[in-house]
Image (cartoon, rainbow, N blue to C red):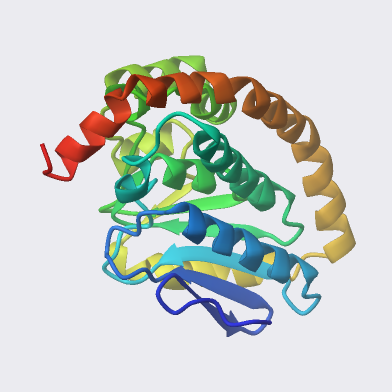
Length: 256
């Protein structure tokens, strides 16, 4: 398997489990289009490797899982084909996690924002540290929330989806656990070991049985996500055409 760029992701093997570490040059782990495409390629390689029977996604210790899209890239968008490509890559990354036939555990630490929440909800089992937080600030940034709304409603229900999108507020690990966004919360120092322990346990399951179960349970959801992906492009383009997201991202970056 080709080694991923050390500046983006690191893949470690622990017996039958592959641990993908988000190891970007900045502790916030913002995801550019290039980084998302690299993660897509890595997930495809893990899917093709028969010796991998379980997968963990997590950040480097002391880093956030990911704060979402890279504002340095997104602030340069103008509302053209680049928006479609970025939007489709986000959807492809969600589908890649949903269609990965190996049990996939995600360990969430620090800030988990936007795309980070989408990736997490596309994995089979979600663990959060006691200091993690989840947030969907799309509407506050001027971004369309069609795709994220679909994902949130599926996992947490319509009321939580509406509250999360309209308020833009931060969900504590306790709230995320209560609302079904997380399945377990553990002390910060136990996050990596708990994720590996669970993935190792899940890796012992019969492979054909797990594969058939996951594919069946996710099929209709993935079909719906692909439909939303197609219809949401125009809404996302319109947001960037207005210039509002770029303005608010520059303000966040301290450039305005």
